[in-house]
Length: 67
Image (cartoon, rainbow, N blue to C red; front, side, top):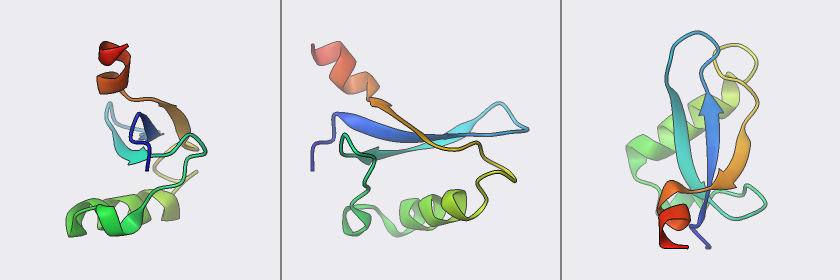
């Protein structure tokens, strides 16, 4: 997986959101996530439109610094 990208779920109500490594299409390799990260990712997907905005895919901060 090309981890130069991340999928971001911005909170609709609080100032924070969740980010997960993904490929350029937004596909997350679930087996590569820790148990907690996998639970958070699945939760964020389940509550899109309720607690989190629709996710966006962007270059990760680490990739931006490296280029």
